[in-house]
Every structure is written in C-alpha cells, then in structure tokens.
Image 1 (tube, one colour):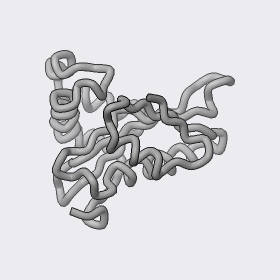
Image 2 (cartoon, one colour):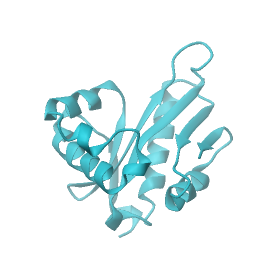
Image 3 (cartoon, helix red, strand yellow):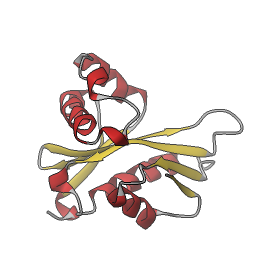
Length: 150
C-alpha cells in the first residue's frame, strides 16, 4: 500500500461507527499508547463516539471506504496555552503502516491548527518511548516548534 491511495478527511457524525470500531481496536491492540482503556470505552454507546467527533477535529485516513487511521487535534485554551496544539488518539492499523499514513494525518491536523489561528506555534504529541514508528513519523513531520514528549 502506498500513501497515494489514502484519502485524509475530517470525520463527521456519519463516520461514528467506523471511528468506534477503529478506536476500540486501537485500545485493544496498543493499550500502552492511550490514556483510556478498551474496557472503559467499549461500554460507551455509538452516540458517545458521535459526540466525541463533534467536539473537535478528528481526521481519518481511508483506504477505499475502510477507515485505517485516525488522529485528533485540539488547540489549548487560555492566554498562556493558546499557542499550543495537541495531537491525541493517533492510530494506524497494522496493515496500513509504513506507507506514510501517519505522516498524512499529522499534516492534516497541522494544517487545521495553522488555519484556525496563526497563534499556534507548537504542536505537542505524546508518544510511548517504545513506539519507534510513531516517533519516526513525528520527527519526519517536525517543523520548528513541533514538540515530541516521550
């Protein structure tokens, strides 16, 4: 698979079922990478995931009609924090990795943050220190002010 056959777009309420399925797979397959757990989120109804998509941008990577990756972004609030953006919940299915999908998701979120406010000067991505693939993706995308927290 190559990055050219991937479509990146912001997820909407119609994507809630696919988002739920991928999010639960992420929590089950890579529990160390997330602040939440499969046990906690698997009990949530579809409406909970739909609401989550409405609270802030979550970008999806699609291979044909299959959702193979996601990444959420948020701009911090408050006078002393509004210059920071946060990347959260990034996950790419194992069979879609090493094809630039993660990089494309990061670029989509970075573009959204830049378009939203020129004041975003730093994007923070928390990555588990054992996750070499994610660290490579973030470092490749790194621009001045892109912070990688291990």
